[in-house]
Structure formats: structure tokens, C-alpha cells
Amino acid sequence: MTTVEWIGIFATAAVAGAAAAFGLIRLFGQKWLRAQFDERLEGIRSELNKQMDQTVKLHQREFEVLPRSWHLLVDAYAATTHSVSPVQSYADLNRMNSNQLTAFLENSSLLDWQRAEIERAADKTDCFVRFANNQRLREAQ
Image (cartoon, rainbow, N blue to C red; front, side, top):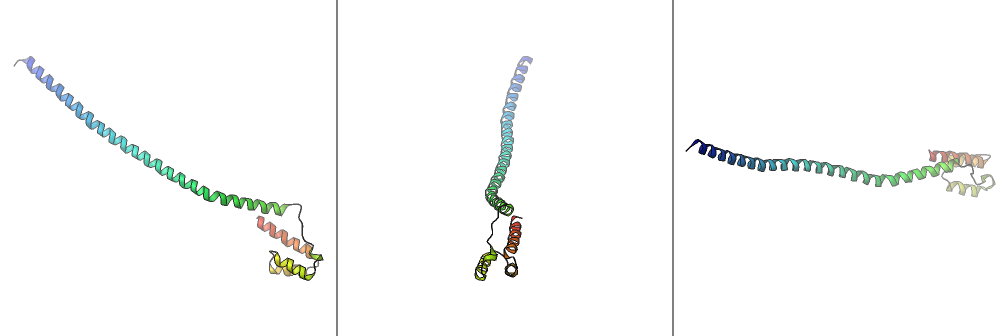
């Protein structure tokens, strides 16, 4: 065998070895890259699912809290408007007889001691107006 033949065999073996090495690197490299890509993709999916779950819970809580908040706001607005309205009308308690006065006071939301004080007052209407205004202000607060 001549040197040229040895060089040819060596070159052929080198090319075959290089091709085999390239094939192995390509095969394992693709598998490694695919595994890395899949791992990162799964991490991203997990993070997105976590964020979506949090968002859904937040929106669910909003649907529970907002109607209640709105109801409280409307009640507060109504109580405030009612307490600061310049036009107020009251029954004239001074013109009622004792039975009418007792029935009227029993249907009111006043406390027992307030009812008793109104019944003893000289100006029953004025005393009732003071208690009613204080009650409205407390409700508005």
C-alpha cells in the first residue's frame, strides 16, 4: 500500500467519523434542545395558568363585592341627602290628642326615653324634630 492509499483510507475514515460524529451531535443536540425548549415552555404555561387563576379569582371577588359596595353607597347617599335636605316636613305633635300621640310615637324608631321626653315636653313637635334630626345625622354618618 502506498502512501496515497493510506491517505485516502485515512481521509475516508476521517470523513466517515466526522459524519457519524455530526449525526450523533445533531441527534442528541436536537433531543437536548427539544427537552430544554419543552421545559421552558412548561414553565411559561405554568406561570400563565397561575396568573389566569389569580385573575379569575380577582374577578370573582369583584362580582361579589361591587354590588354590596354599590348598595352601601346608595344607602349612604340617600341617608345624607335626607338629612341635609332643606325641605323637611314633620307631623304637628302639639295638635294630637294623647292617644294619637302615643300611637304616633310607638310607630316611630325613637327610643323609649325619647318618647317619654317628647310626651313631657311643652313643645312636643320641637322635641321630636330634634330627636329625628339627630337620628338622621347618625344614620348618614
